[in-house]
Image (cartoon, rainbow, N blue to C red; front, side, top):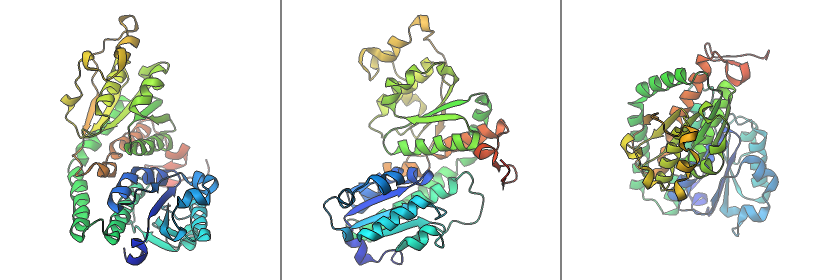
Length: 369
């Protein structure tokens, strides 16, 4: 880490901006709480690349700090993102510190960045981007912890503890991966004929949901969007033919919006939507009486009267995850079940990824499509 950014420079950072495109943007947003908590820097933003490059003024970038107190991080696994390179150029031109998180130091963005953090992922299949996404998540948490260590908001023992916590947490998840993999394949078979999906999550898990959305589109070319537990009630609940939507709901027991998400799941089931719940909570935590709904005037009950076939005996599928040592760590694994489901749903329909451009069976890209 010292080779990436010397400790003296790191200690002087008071403002962080992280940007990227596609998966990298999702990683930046998912790790924003980690960056703020670990570094002790509250002035942290994660705009998408086009917003940062074309709409952020110098004043908005600095936010009352000096340019030399600002760290601008671009995430690009390939290092060849034009917008990532532009973001780093912007940092250099105004005198801020530019840092690239990548696997390819020798790249377009790598040539621009003053500081480079090479994640050095091993060789292997990365399509459609799960390994690179995970590497970006870990790298951003490492940057946050390193800044905190240099600034004195983390002790050396706490820095080491965080590293061990991440490792133990991921290992505990990997102990379940075979069962989760089988579960997602079985669910993909059941959801084989669905052409529309929606992913629901709140706060930083909303960026995990965004990543899962991206995988559904990239792998199978199906319609998919992501929303929050609140916006589901305001908008998505009124979609035509709701039973034709496959739902992926992501929620942790410690989340402040747990009661609202529980109602959202109830709304999905009332509309006969096939629903997967990715959670660290026990399934019984989602059982709720209509009298305890966390919504005015029993909203879902009102809009699902007996005339609308409200009564449903359907149950969601629960994918149980280990409890994260700290809430900001949950995005390190919570994207995996939904991403597996997206890949398998494409596979059982014999759809090559990226609109026919990638044959997942033999890991070959086609230039003929």
